Length: 306
Image 1: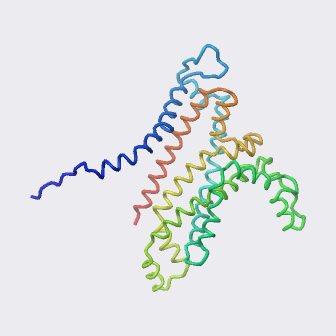
Image 2: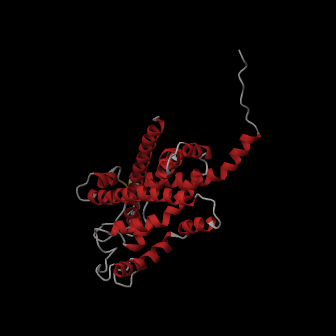
Image 3: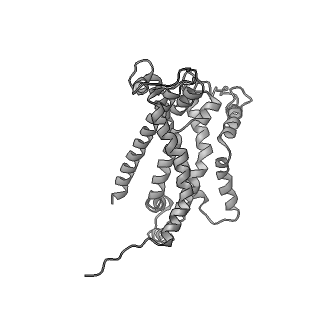
């Protein structure tokens, strides 16, 4: 019988804790504390216009959000817009990130410039990106998209109201979001590509595998863990959609682009109903956590299949 090796708490462990301590403190101050504050406020009727202070309402705010026949449809409409947006953005942005990463995973002179070029939109603030795209989405012929379509169709396609048509407003914002965020996912996928052993590609070439066979049988399996992370983080980013909506459409037209985050922010800072905004935030965080756990479970099961 061999002796059991005891793990001692050494200087490396202490150094790791000390190095992570600032991040943990910021996480507690700016995530944990605000979230638990929102939970407390959600049980009260908190309004900026109230003179006599907050009143305890219990689960009334949650009842109005989830089951009240008058107010709950507004929340569910915003939630459906979030899901629709995520169903568009997550597969398109992930697929485009993989395509760009594969194209840029080559050793050529000047390839660093092209990598930086595709990553550049991620550096810009979303407010600036939204203002630029507002000009591109202009409904008249002066808008870049309408002008381009008019030129390519020789005047056959008339100017489109990209942000004023309820049928395509959310799709237009999804197009903006894919352009603005694909560079972030591309960099992550590119790092994953560079971790795939070159011997696997060499073995596939010896087996006379063509480009598609190498991509499907070597690249995609090698990127499985990376794609799991990319899909989950892209889903979270897409569900917290707010900036583009606030700048471009204000939730319109006819609530076609109203999201849960927009509803929470406007409830707090426009209507002054902090209790309702807090309840919306708590419900939405729980929904995101459930979706993330389901994704982890499903992707883990797929990963274990041999």
